[in-house]
Image (cartoon, rainbow, N blue to C red; front, side, top):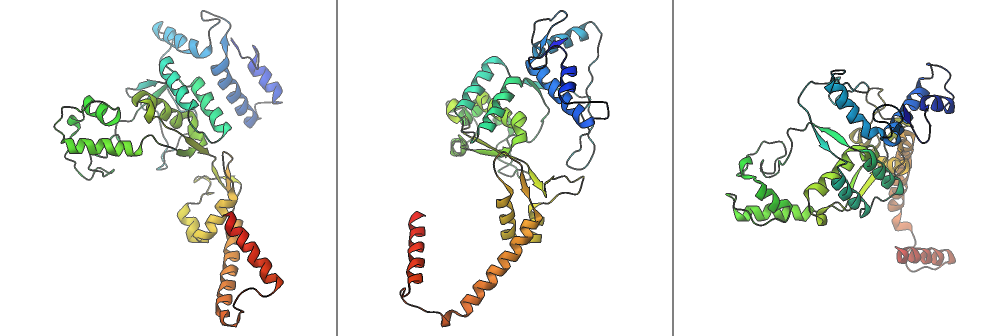
Amino acid sequence: VINIPEFGDKSAEKVCFSLKIKSQNDKEKLAEAKRMTYLKGFTDGTMIVGEFSGRKVQEAKPLIRKKLLEEAMAVLYSEPEKKVMSRSGDECVVALTDQWYITYGEDEWKQKAVRCLENMNTFSAETRNGFEHTLGWLNQWACSRSFGLGTHYLQNGNMYGKEISSIIPEQMTDEVWDYVFCDGPAPKSDIPCALLCKMKQEFEYWYPLDIRVSGKDLIQNHLTFSIYNHTALLPEHHWPRGFRCNGHLMLNSEKMSKSTGNFLTLKEATAEYSSDATRFALADAGDGMDDANFVTETAESAVLRLTKELAWMEEIIASESSLRSGPPTTFADRVFANEMNIAVKET
């Protein structure tokens, strides 16, 4: 049905052979095979049979969907790919509600996003490759947010909505938005000119953003959305200048997970090991796109070393009156002074 460049016409057979899958009990290998074939099939696959033969899968999919619905051969149905838990610990279900989509991937819009990425600092080739790959396949994406937008002035700077501003939503006309965010002309508005100028000045103080730091798992969604949305709404000189992505944080070489109990918050770490020992463990954990590994033994060892260092300092201070003073007199003194001078000059 589908030809995939790397796997040919029989992708399932090819991948099962490559991964040496023997039976349905090889669950991990089967999951990896599914991931490989589904992803490559959608992004690079070409239909080889039927009405849409010769078309890319990502082009044919919405056409086939439309045809099946029009001919009453299918009904719309949605479910999560796997069990989804909310931050409150509740299991999520699919709700049958009205839904609208943002058409990421539209040609003109995509060209702007690509141009934005070309001029951005991603701080690593791996991050840039991730963005380029996502821009290659991202298309329609469901949008469900109905609150939490534009709170600063409408809520008098209080993000929780406990304050009431002198500005009401009806005053935020298209002309006001264009003036504040898009270098538009001064609008005719009931909002005082001084407040309009303050709004515009505050926006221009923060934009364009020089760097946003986020986890690498957000490249395929929120961070690419951010590029698209900035290029759609703002003039080019306000487009983002840099995104730096980091890996996940593991705890003792295992994925942090509340459900398994392998979890540690920053507050808990500083209470258990002190802020200084926590810094030691974090500095030793790793950096960049690789997953960082917070090792509790490193933090515990740092506590002992710092305690010993503190005791030594207190001992030296207590015996200060018995120590030699004055200029260097021995060869060792002069070597030490020279090394200190070199270190000071280099920093």
